[in-house]
Image 1 (cartoon, rainbow, N blue to C red):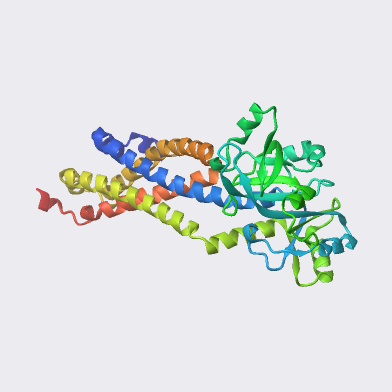
Image 2 (cartoon, rainbow, N blue to C red):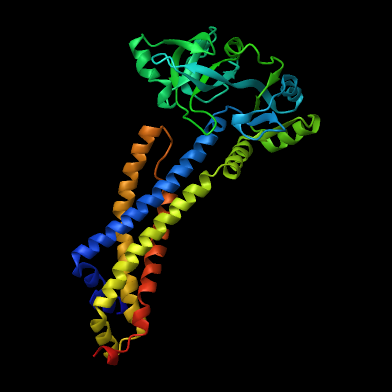
Length: 390
């Protein structure tokens, strides 16, 4: 019975919304624009933070050894290579694999301009990074001066994939004054630390940068036997290692990396401020629309109150209007944001995509924004006396 009564009610709020199509479109456009701003800010900051974790998540290891002075991948500290081989005696260790990471000077083969590039020198005896191109080209990388180039690097490094197609699948260029041959590409993407990435064998990296200390490493990869607890193995390792190194799980190292950039860069604050701006813009637009509608419809609202309808009922009409604006405005907002994400991913090579969690977050913010504006717009209705109007 209650449902039938509800269905028989006149949809006053909906009629108010659709009564003036121009105002309705303005309100929906305002909500959609606000959604677009918030989606843009949250999507971009998530993609930037995810890009920082991608090199670490790509490492084929259960535990990772780094210097105890580790702060971030862009400022790696060396530690003695012998430290990594100390943990070989720990029960449950399957193998260890050294990795060198260094900066070098990349020469764009077309413009001949030089740019910094991040070079990963890997041990080819074991799969160090989870990239199909590395696994497929392990044998070819054993040849000195061979390398894989990150096709998601910044544009100034050149369209390497296209140039390789023109040259039969390989490309010759220079790294720190020495010739190198790019034999394939992989996909990682730029980070705060590096605009471009290159993978070579450890021997090739030492050839390119002979001043590197051969007795020291920047990263040590530790692979455990199936079924061995990483936390238990980590505790065993720390008990035999000196304080100059530490052993972390990939998740722990990723969190350490993320915390560094959250604390030492203004990115989080800037994008959070952008979300706030989008929220405020949408609130102002919806408030102006609803307040104007309330003022123009004061005689009608006064009539309802004179007929015995309560303040709560009259206010609920405006709240329902704001909820309708939120729901309808969200739809084009999320569709436009998905298109924007695709464009940004294409242009910037960042891993930016729509997630259900983010969509629900923005939907909740949209309802708070619209309903909050609706509540503010009803202040006049609470004070409304039908006798004053008529």
